[in-house]
Image (cartoon, rainbow, N blue to C red):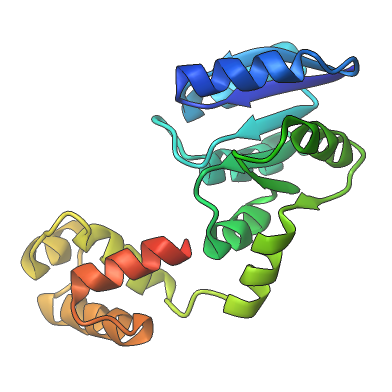
Length: 201
């Protein structure tokens, strides 16, 4: 029996997935959590073999949780199940240690097979997303440019971003200008949107 922890912040979605997986003879959903910061405790407490994680959850995102599980509990396979089917997310998920990546609208049979594949030590990836990720390539943004764009997402001024990140205003403006150029955007908010759409942030 493959023991699964399911982490999804939408109650109805989580319940439906758990119910469908429960119909599989070799799968058992041993815990359901609604917050990313509850996953590690659930995996530990229930001796889970697989963690199925949403990307965006309160407490901690799925990519952050995947990286933590890879470091602290490498015996637990990680599969990302998400509505954010963006190439950048797939690449970042793999870098975080996930071995599976599926869209939420995939058939439950596909999810069950993916769980089995990851449990065997293999990879199970959405083929269209994998092709898009290869065609798109890696994020052109540096770590610092990404950090500055994230800080600018809520409309913060260059001065506020500089203060928060302990940089000078000129340095912040340079990073923003570079990020705008690399994303082909017209302004900082357009750069944020493009980077989000590509899964680079």
